[in-house]
Length: 92
Image (cartoon, rainbow, N blue to C red; front, side, top):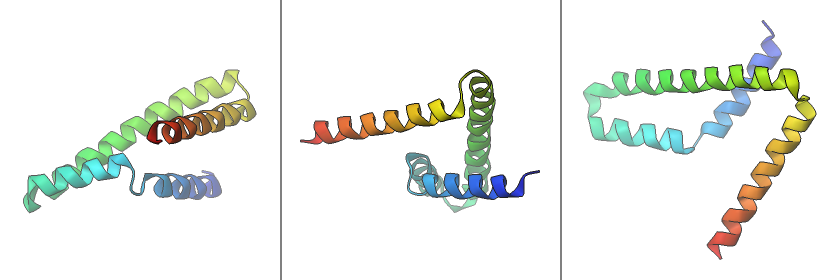
């Protein structure tokens, strides 16, 4: 187990998810379900995040075998810049 990679992945994903739509959706479900259902909401949301992370890891490892990581990082950065520019342009 690569503990340094585990810790850095945890930190990046944890910070990225704070205030994200996933967390806000979970907040809304928990608020609307009453106090007794909090464990059901927690387990359901945790399983959903684990499942989506598993898909990302499998897809990433398959794509990473074909396309160099440097190009994937560049494509991801370009996509974020393009989406940010589009959102700024739409808001004007």
